[in-house]
Length: 123
Length: 158
Image 1 (cartoon, each protein chain N blue to C red):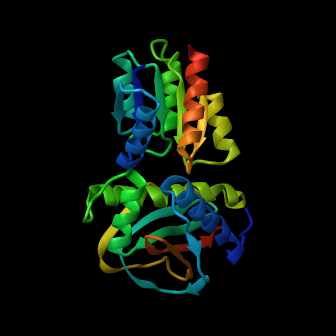
Image 2 (image 1 turned 90 degrees about the vertical axis):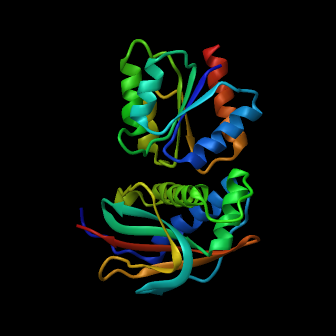
Image 3 (image 1 turned 90 degrees about the horizontal axis):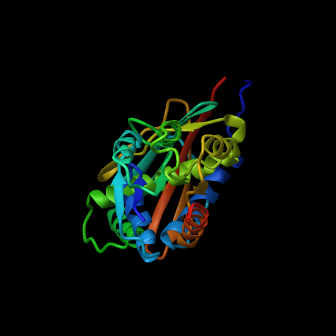
């Protein structure tokens, strides 16, 4: 499974990559903001996206809306991984098409469970 | 929106968020000490992660560390073994501040605040100047890797 990690923090991409690798995923690419993510997703082949919310250039929620509006990418499940913890934000992301939502701070097990739930549903 | 006075209770979401962030993401127990209220955030630290706050309250929240603690916390956070401050240290301290501020937002719904992207300041004995006429609520924390402090400087707006 080809996975795209989108976060402006190298630290968070590293932590998420470590978690995915422990789950057995090895085909992992990284994007540093929403615009970078759109560019990489348009090239095709991705089956899962982990997306931060607050990023420069293009935020995660803006990128999510672009992904879901494009027939070529709308089928790719997007899990928001963000410190935006208010219910209104979570609802906004779900209504925009997010497959799941992980609030930072999280324990690795929580991220693993949310990824497993989304990948099982997509299979 | 009518103005809401910033009280000590409004600092609690940041304290809780700091404890949760260090427990869940770093694997460290961060024990809060006694709250200090003062004007002039002038404690001596080497690296600070700062988040600007806007909306119904404006100001900033920061996490400040001595160099050695920042390095050890970062190493534990990302699974590294650096002996000095690197780009990873700076990114990690900024991300910790970002998570603390973001998670605290849900306890401050009455202010409808927005947070900035993190900024990180490095340098021995640097000072962070809070906005004019705003007091800093400072909470020292202790961990097994050393101490740091949380500073919250907030002012409600009309």
